[in-house]
Length: 249
Image 1 (spheres, rainbow, N blue to C red):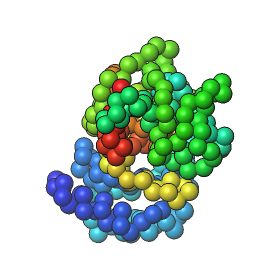
Image 2 (image 1 turned 45 degrees about the vertical axis):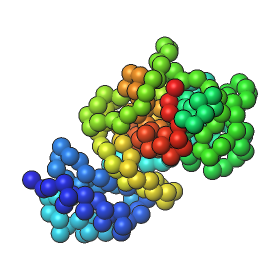
Image 3 (image 1 turned 60 degrees about the vertical axis):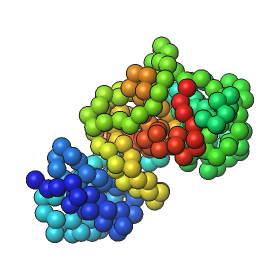
Image 4 (image 1 turned 120 degrees about the vertical axis):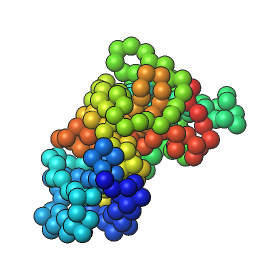
């Protein structure tokens, strides 16, 4: 058995050394290993470089080739509903309110959805939602996109193996389990994110920003997914809420 500090140190060295597009790595607690996933876009040379890097760690680290391509889930009101700013289409995440001013309500969605396009956001029918203020938008309601409303009353961190559900305008409603936590992912465009929860839920382009939840608990916001392996990555929601001083309502 390897202790947590040893495994965490291997993950940190990977974080410090590699930004290989199409990869994901982190500590798999149940397997007692650092597992590196490399999708179909990772070249043989890059795969070999990763393999050689972890070789000195023996069974403490394992490299796995997976099918598909790992991409951020954006494409050029309720949880999972379509929102767009004239250039980018994403999904509505959670309704939040300012702790300092509870009358001020906003939408929390994926930050990368706001990089391109205008500041004004509308629903699929053209109804105005609000404007970009940081990485969230004013007004809205939240419910699960499974045909029935699901009120979200609080937020918390997910746990490994937890049964969870997600919603997005492209893939609609789906459920699975949290398979990995604290993962570092480098998407095929080279953008790297850290601290991600990864769930076995199929997501696709346009689902970005959509909610991950368990009953009435808000858990995460969709960052990206692997288009073949049905692995989707989520920013833990409490970190984003704390950053902006808001809470789910």
